[in-house]
Each structure stands twice: as C-alpha cells, then as structure tokens.
Length: 85
Image (cartoon, rainbow, N blue to C red; front, side, top):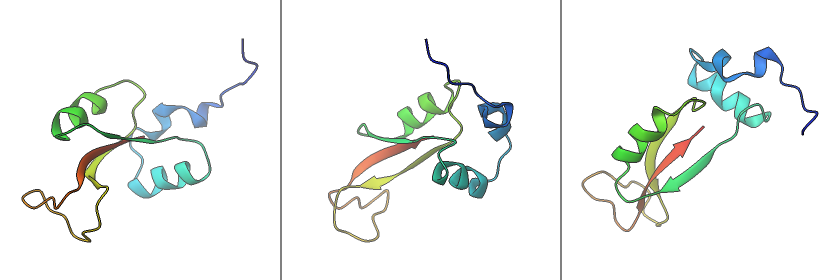
C-alpha cells in the first residue's frame, strides 16, 4: 500500500469549474496528468472519456502529419486524437 497522501486542493473536484489556463498550469506543475489517444474518429472517444469519473477535460485534435493547418474536412494524413486530462 502506498503512503502517499492527497491534499484536498489536489483532488479532481477542485478542477470542476477551473479555467483552461488553471488546468494547463496544474499539468505543468504535476498536479494533473494527461494522455493522448488516436482512435479513428475522435467524437465517440471524446464523449466516452469526457463522462468518465476523474477526467477533468478532453480536447480533440489532429496529430502525426506535417500539414500545419488540418481541418475536419481535410485531414491531410493526420490521425484524429483525443487528449484526456
């Protein structure tokens, strides 16, 4: 069993109404963690992860190709991804 203790202010509940800037800052200082999933279309995974307890925020986007400005209609080799915090 771990001896780590969680401070109340570090709990996910304190990020329920946090601004995107506050969430990004919490990521930088290690209070939150993130991962990115590439799973084909991003809308289903975004919805599923977004409703999972403990998930603070999801963001969809594109990754993996050299085009600077991919769009939903013109992906240009990118994968659709979901960022989960």
